[in-house]
Length: 356
Ligand code: ACO
Image 1 (cartoon, rainbow, N blue to C red):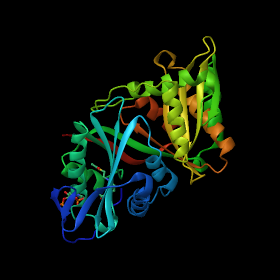
Image 2 (cartoon, rainbow, N blue to C red):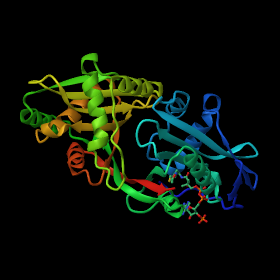
Image 3 (cartoon, rainbow, N blue to C red):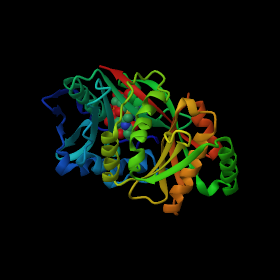
Image 4 (cartoon, rainbow, N blue to C red):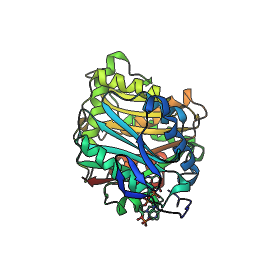
């Protein structure tokens, strides 16, 4: 993230918060997400040109949609800090109700015009109280930094007693910079190495006959992806949970494109990859989860699925040009595939954890 525009002014009394009200005229109050979720989007919108100008702006449908259509397997709390009605910052706390129930996942943003005045610290102190009341023992937050230096997010996290537990990197693929012949050559070779598998593609919702396999693969990712020092209980998905997630993704305005490998001998899906496009951008997407089951690895299925899915997505999304993805630094296999596809490092990122 870029150094924030700084406005040195009086500090708000973070530690002096009582009953949701802070000294210095700042109040931290729960936001009614059904009626006032737009405050979250507005803060993301004004922070974007300061923190991540190289990214497309946030989409309203995504920011607001996740709040007005909460996932039934999670509870979410949105709190905003205001002074005389003006939003200074906010946090979104999310806790899974099914696994890792001890973890409060958090997103926090402070209005660029009100940074370095204790708003962030006051919000984290408030959040810690809420998380404890929910029975959480850990706070976990994702933070991005420029490649060569620590940014405000990680400096803030370190100052507040968080430690990095999972080091990642965000990479970006610019399709305009890739030799189109290169992907074709890689795909042809990968298909030769992975005879005996057929690619199955879908948009938004897995075909009924593959939904159970897809649910299993999706959950399996949380067990197989490297987590380094982040202790993470594997997530379990069944058809009902994956269908709920597919609906939730659509309600946030995203369209998903997926490609899966069907093992011809058994008819089972043994690998999958997914790209998602936020509703307000046609040129930008996220390369989401990719998984090949251990007994089917070593056949270039991961590379094959990713290229086939890119081709599939581009059939529907001819304007697609930029695709971002995150990988743990320790995930050599996935990083190698992404580098071969032309993904290039954009920022460092990390999951930071604080024990309560
Ligand atoms: N550079 C160096 N240290 C910083 C910076 C910075 N830009 N910002 C905060 N800190 C550290 C300092 O130690 C500071 O204490 P000090 O001012 O007495 O030196 C301490 O953090 C507390 O700072 P606050 O004033 O409470 O933080 P602020 O209100 O400015 O919010 C935040 C900081 C949330 C990182 C803001 O810059 C922001 O919204 N950035 C974009 C989104 C983001 O990165 N979110 C945080 C993710 S990490 C997490 O949630 C645990």
